[in-house]
Every structure is written in structure tokens, then in C-alpha cells.
Length: 161
Image (cartoon, rainbow, N blue to C red):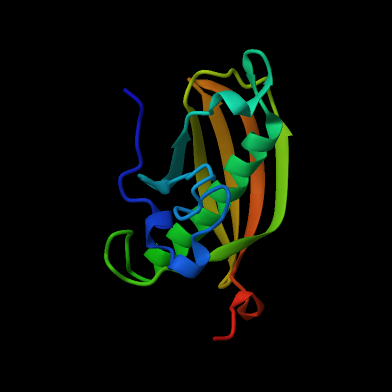
């Protein structure tokens, strides 16, 4: 049975900020990555679809980069939300982050047809900036690792009404 994230931070994003192709719950064509806590680490579990193939039997690297990217920003949001005394599902507004930097290293070819698990460790480097180290596993095989620098959504992203 595939693991599932029950209380994902993406479920709490305001509708205006829930359209990301990777993790936006309102983007019908998107991946719908869901990031939650697993102890003191963050976790996202995702099973690639047939269209995410690079070569027969292997996952396209762009999907892996997208997974690391969205897992990083979701992890930063989880960390700041927890620091503020809340957890997903508390009904409190959540901080929204965007990516300032993304670095990905592909360790091994990622096999297609198995769930991928992204695990993250969050380090606060500034009150509005977090560094997230992410490892992506297929079964128990480390396939990729990356680092995301995530920053609180700048006011310039907000639409005037």
C-alpha cells in the first residue's frame, strides 16, 4: 500500500496561491504534490504517470526537479507554520513560499513504476528564508538529492484587487 500524506500544507494554501503546476491543488493538469510532516522531516510521496517517462523504465529528470522544488517550498511553509505554533489542519493561515534557488543532483537513474518519496530537512537561515535539503527515493534507492532556498512570498506577487 502506498504511503499518503494526510495533512498536507498545500491543502491550506489560499486559493490565489494554489495554482502551481507541481503542488497546486486547484491546477487540474498539475501533479498535486502533497507535503506533510514525518517526525522532524518532511515527506512527499508521488507516483509518476506514464507521461513522466524519460526512456522506457525511467522517470524524466524534470519531474524529479519539480518534486524537489515543490517539496522544498512546502517544507519551508510547514516549518514556519510550526514555528508560529500551528500544524496543517488547524484552520490558521499558512505562510506561502517561492523558490529563490534550486540545485539538483541526480544520483542514480530513477525507475518508473514505483512511488517516489521526497524527504526533507529544513534549516532556517533567516526569518523569511529557509534552506531545505531534499532526498528522493524510489523504493529504498536514493535517486536524487537537492537543495532549495525558499523565501516568503514577496508582496510583489500579490495582485491588487
